[in-house]
Amino acid sequence: MDRIDDFLAQRKADGLLRVLRPADSRRAGKIYYGGTELFDFSSNDYLALSDHPRLKEASKKAVDSLGVSASASRLLSGDLKIHHQLEDRVAEFKGKESALVFNTGYQANVGIISALYDKGDAVFCDRLSHASIIDAVRQSGARLFRFNHNDLDHLESILKKESSKFKNRLIVTETVFSMDGDKPPLRELVDIKDRYDCLLMVDEAHATGIFGPNGAGVLEEQGLSSRVELIMGTFSKALGSFGAYLACSEKVKQYLVNSCRSFIYSTALPPAVIAANIEALNIVRDEPVRRQTLLTNADFFRTRLREDGFDVTGSSQIVPLIVADSNRAVRLSGELQKSGFWVLPIRPPTVPKGQARLRFSLTCHHTKELLGKLAERIVEGLQSEK
Image (cartoon, rainbow, N blue to C red; front, top):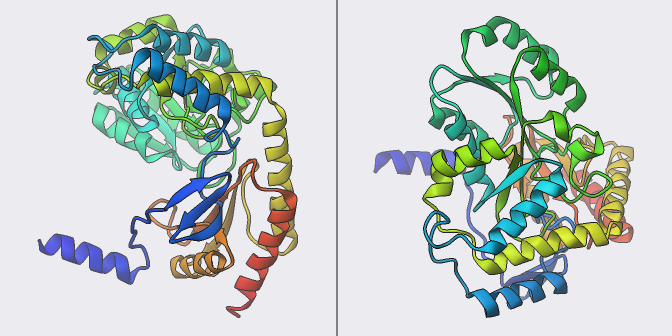
């Protein structure tokens, strides 16, 4: 098709053509390509739990007792007691009445929003919200309004003009934005949603396990869990496993069980995955030093890059280095790879035009010594372009 040829040619010309890169393996903060060992700075395994012996042992026991697959959707014969045990743990962890487990974060966001909202409703979301949130609103038929990133004055101006025109209103944000590593002003956002009679949904995918006294996320850290109606997150990042969840009221859970297509028509997650998720929550409780060390090291790395004069954003374990030009981001990524550091360029349309970057995703495997060496190599790589 001409359309495919034109699309691929334009992507290549713009430096935006993406390709899959199958690794030989990845383990202990490193990734292996063709026998080459590189430090992995593109993983979301923030707490280094994906290879934790307790997770592996929990999965093995579940396979031995319950088999490899659930083999059906949860509304057929795929619903096991272990799924409900995980949901009870999540509800307690997030400080909500109930919880529902989904197969992926994408399925969760698309399913939840499209089930709860319809034509005649409106969704107001941060402009940098994840693609799954945008897709969810479009699929729902609700009217989509996007406010400037973390700009609550802009949000309120839209709400003043538009909110009264719609039957149901939802505000959506993330507690740690995946490409910028920053957080929204949540207290003010909660006040706004109350003032305009909206519900609030937050995506805690990149915050779960890392922030808060118990690792429950930014909402716990700021004492706001009880004021947010819909708290979504994943098990596939800091928790080192797979799947997603929604923490909510029991009434919302029962509604979704009966109406959410991505839940109803999906085979239930395998017992081994569910068991690993439960054990990951136990480790977050038992080993707080992991998240404490991670955030301390992230602050060190971000400060070091800023002292070297680089444009760095965020306040989390995600450290984006803005280089603006897509081709420049690709070149620097290649230079770092030659030095043993695996970090990939993030380019439009994932980020806005002119905002191409290297996204350093830090984990517990990254020591201050290693981060210092990486910072030195970044300086050398960018200076060599001048």
